Length: 243
Image (cartoon, rainbow, N blue to C red; front, side):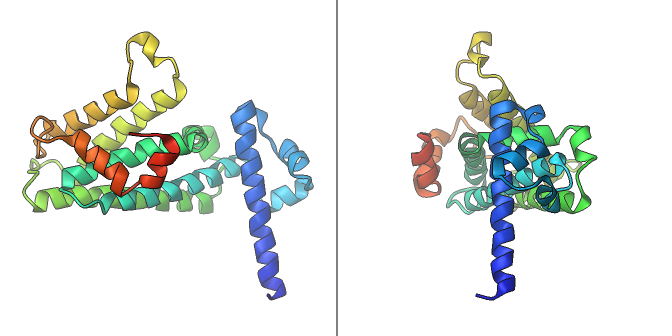
C-alpha cells in the first residue's frame, strides 16, 4: 500500500470518527450540546485537526445529512425496482421511508436541523451540492415511477399538473408526517393511535385523488406492502420488526 493511499484511508477513518462522535453527541445532548471543543475532546484529536475536516459544526450536520441522503437514495432505488405496477412501486418508496426512519432516527433529526436557515447559511457550497445530489437522486427515482404510471395508463394527469407536482405532494405529506412522528412521541394522546398507518392511508388518499390506479379500494396494498418487505427489504424488515 502506498503512503498516499494509507494517508487517505487514515483521513477517511478520522472523518468517520468525527461524524459518529458528533452524531452521538447530538442524540445525547441535542444540537446545542455539540461543539468543536467537545468533539476534539471526545475523539482525542486537537481542535485544529477537527477544523481540517470541517469548517464549523454546521458543516458537520451537513455531512451527516449527506450520509443519510446517500442511504435514502439507495433505499429509493431498490424500492423503484420492485416487481409490480407503478403504484405498487410508489408504495415501496413509502415503505423505504418508514424503514429509513426506524433505522436512522438520528439522521432524520439531523435533516430537520439542517433545514433551519442559520445552519444552511453557514454550510460550505461544496457540502450543499453533495446534499442536493442526494435529493436529486431521490426525486429521479420517484418521478420515474410517476412517468411510468402515465405511460402505462394507470394515471392521467391534468394539463397543468406535472409528474414532479405529484411527487412534491407525496414528499410534503411524507416528510411532514414523519417529522411529526419523530418529534412527537405522544401522538396517541391527541387521538392518533397508529401514526405510521395513518400516514400510509393519507399517501394512498392523495394517489386516489389523482385517480392513480389501481385505487386503494380495488387493490390489496397491505399484501403489496408485505411482499415489498419480504422481497425488497428483508434484512431491513428483520432489523426493524416492520411488518
